[in-house]
Amino acid sequence: MNHINKFIITLVFFSGISFPQTEPLDGDSDGKREVYSLDHLLWISTHTAGWGYSYEQTADIDASSTSGWGGGGFSPIGNTTVNFTGVYDGQGYKISQLYINRETDYNAFFGCLSGATISNLQLYQAQIHGDNFTGALFGTAMSSTISNCSSTFYVNGSHSYTGGLGGYASGCTITDCYSTASVYGGTAGTGDQMYTGGLIGELSGSSILRNSYYNGAVSGHNFTGGLIGTCSCQEVSKCYSKGSVMGNDRTGGLIGHLNNDIDNCYSRSAISVNVTGSEVGGLFGAVWNNTISNCYSTGTVSGTSSVGGLIGYNYSPPTISGCFWDTQTSGSSSSAGGTGKTTAEMKTQSTFTDAGWSTSIWNMDSGNDGYPYFDWENPGGSPLPVELTFFTSQVINNDVYLKWETSTEIDNYGFEVQRVKSEELNVKSFETIGFVQGAGNSSSPRSYSFADRNLANGDYLYRLKQINTNGSFDYWGQKEAHILFTPGKFELSQNYPNPVNDLAIIKYQLSVDCYVTVKIYDALGSEISVLVNEQKPAGIYKVQLDATRLTSGVYYYRINAGGFRAVKRLINIR
Image (tube, rainbow, N blue to C red; front, side, top):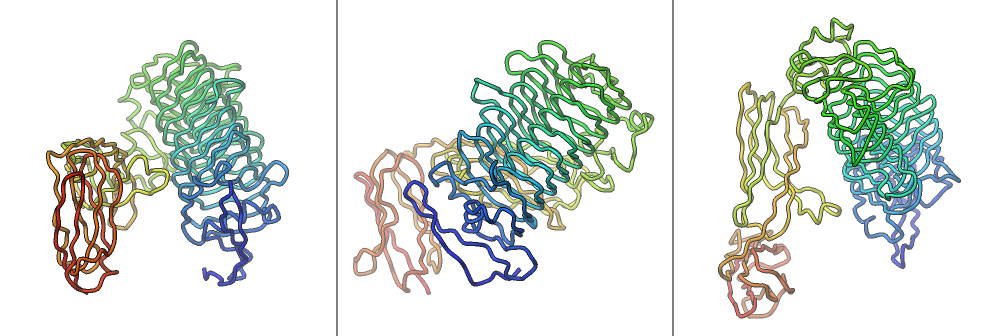
C-alpha cells in the first residue's frame, strides 16, 4: 500500500505528557484506512466516531512506548457505550508490546466488539491487565467474525472472564486463531473468580470455534480450561491445547465446563489444582448432556474429587464415541466417560481408525510425539521439519554456553541465536547475536552449541529461531542465564575494529563498584564526546562509538574509574 503523505495530527495528554495521534486515511481508495504507526492506533482508540470504520494495517507497529503512558497505557478500542463495529485487517502484521494495566472491565486491544470483522492480526508480547472481561485481542465480542489472529506473552484478569485472546464471546465465528500468552484469571483472591481459558474465558450462544489452539500456562479458579473456561456454544471442532492448566472446581485440559456438542479435539495439557479442586479432567472438568466424538487427552491429571483421565464429572450422561485418554501419562485409570488406553495403544493408528476417525482430519506419524494431530497443523502429515530434543544454558564466569539437540531434521537451514535482558523484555525485542548452520536433512540426533562471551552482569533470556530452507521459521526457548561475575582487576581493552570507519566497540572491566567516565579526545586533547558518565557495579562492560560522526584521524579514549586511569588510541578512516 502507498502511504498517503497528508496527515491530520493532534495531541493526546496522559499525566501531563503529550503523545501525537494521526488520523489514518484511505490513501489507495480501497475503502480501508491504512494503519502503520502507533499514532494511528492512538487516534482510533480516542475517537469513537472511528469505531465503525474499516482499517487495514500495512506495517508492523512498535507499541512498547505504551508502557510509559499514564492512566494505565493504551486505551481499548470500543467500550460498553460505543462498540467497535468496523473492520480491522492486520494483513499478517504485528502490534508489538502493547501495554494495558487498569483495574477496570473490558481491557484488551478491542474492549468491546459487536458485528465487527477482525482478521490477520498478531499481538506480539502484549502485556494486558484488567478486572473482568480481559484478553489480548478483545474483552467481549458479540456477533463478530475473528480469523487468523494471535497473541503472545501475558494476560492477567483480577476477577472473571479472562482469556489469552478474549474474555467473552457470544454469537461469534472464530477460526485459525491461537495464543501462547501466560494467562492468569481471578488473581484478586476475592469476589467472583471464574471463567479462565487459554484462548477464551467464556464462549457461548451461536459461537463457532474451529482450527484454533492454545500452548502455554493457564492459572485460574473455578471454570478453568486450557482452551476455554466455560463453553455453551454451537460448535467447537479441530482445536487443541498444550502446556499446563491450574484451577479449582471444574478444571479441564481443554474446557473447564462443557455444555455443547464437540468433535475432533485434543488436549496434551497437564492439569492440577491450586489448593482443592473437584470435577477435574484431562479434557473436560464437567459436562452436561452432550455429544462428544473423536477426542483424546494425554496430560497428567490431579485433584481432590471427581477426577478423570478424560472427564471429571458428568451432570447428565453424554453421548460419547471414539474418545480416549492415556492411562499411563495421565496417572488416571478412571473417567466419567471415554476409554482408557496405554501409551502404546494411544500411538497406534488402528486405535483411532477402528473407532471411525477420519484420516483427512487427523495425521499420525513422528509429529506430536507420536499422538494424533490435525492435518491443518502439518498438511499432508509428513514428519515435522525439525524436532528439538533439548535446549540448555550454562553460565561460566561472565560467559553463557548454550547447547541444544535435534532428533530429526528436514530442510533445516539453521538457527539464529537471540537474546534480551530480562528486565528489558517489556520494552525491547529479542536481538539476534549469532547464527549456527543446520544439518539440512538428518534422521539421527544432531548436537549444536553457541557461546555468548564477556557479558555484563544481569539476567538474560535466550531463544532460538529455527529457519527452514524455504524461509519459514519457528521460535524455541526461552532459557534464562544469570551473570554475576567480578573481574580480578580493572582493564580497558583496545577498541574493535581498529582502524574503524563506522561503529567501534570499546570494552572495559571494573573490579569494584565505582563511578566511571569514558571520554573521547581528538589528537589535540580536546574532548569530543562522553560515552559513559555514571556509577557502575563491578563487572565487564562494552560501549559503542559511532565513528561516522568523526572525521578521519587519530583519536584517544580514556577511562577514569575510581583510582584506575587508562588511555587507548583509535584510528578513524573515512
